[in-house]
Amino acid sequence: MTGEFNLINKYFVDRQSQRKDVLLAAGDDCALVEMPENVSIAISTDTLVAGTHFLADAPAAWVAHKALASNLSDLAAMGATPAWVSLALTMPEPDESWLKPFCDAFFELADYFGVQLIGGDTTKGPLSITLTVQGFVPKERALRRNGAKIGDWVYVTGELGDSKAGLDVVLDSQCQSKPYADELLHRHFHATPRVLVGQAMLPYASSAIDISDGLISDVQHILKASQVGVSLDVDALPLSKELIQFVDDKRMAQQYALTSGEEYELCFTVPEEHKGVVDTATAHCGVQVTCIGQIRPQEQFELHASGELLDWPISGYDHFKET
Image 1 (cartoon, rainbow, N blue to C red):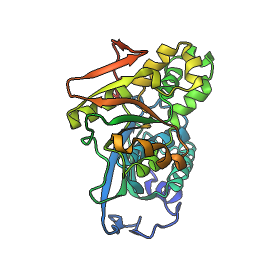
Image 2: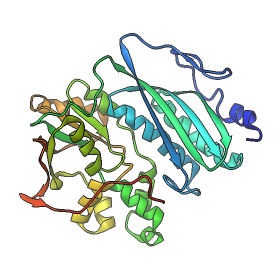
Image 3: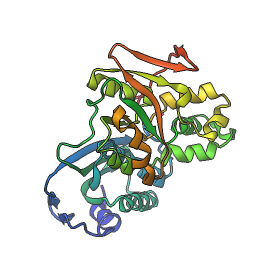
């Protein structure tokens, strides 16, 4: 990329305070970091590609927030504390009018969660962003997908379905005139990683995952890893008033809540003996936590409402569908 080092120096170098565990963040072939004692390192990598995860004309600041938030959400799902991030940015041309708001939003979110950029790469090509985040979790205490047991209760954070509604606004101009279209569009790009909830549930949750492919898909990752089944009460799904008015049908809103991808809320399971402490443990996190079902024997997978079983032909979000 023409002017690569000038762009790096102008937009990425010396943008943050140095963490004590970062020995060298830039200026050499590798970053150097120092690992605290008695922790494991949680690592996650995600790529966002124009035309698949966002439209090429999406606001750069929104794209930056979405890219970093999606990675931080993976750390949150394991109860990890974010520490470091590296960024590989591919652009068709060096466009400073795009890069400035991108970097401003990126570093704003990174600073909020105490994450330091420690390296990366820039190159010429189709617009895409690849991030690798790393965080700390106490040894042998990370939340995983394979710990759910029969009888555990299933919880989710926040309100579900808004991201799918926001994507409708992106893809269908007729949706732009629907109630709360602008707010839901904003929520599609501006998820809040539930880092505090993940940390709070480390002593209590038996399994966890972040909702990136839709609840109906992601909960099945827990079921497969744990070799269990589940019963979900769709009437318990947390829905925003904006979503209900946008789709103008509560049952449709519930289906959005089950299938909406890129929510970056958490789904986690809690044994019966810890059910009573969930609200207290998460009270400081500033986010709603809702019990939506219970883990059942492996052969069981059911959705129900008002005591009746539902047979809805629904599936989760597909990242390979063109947007």
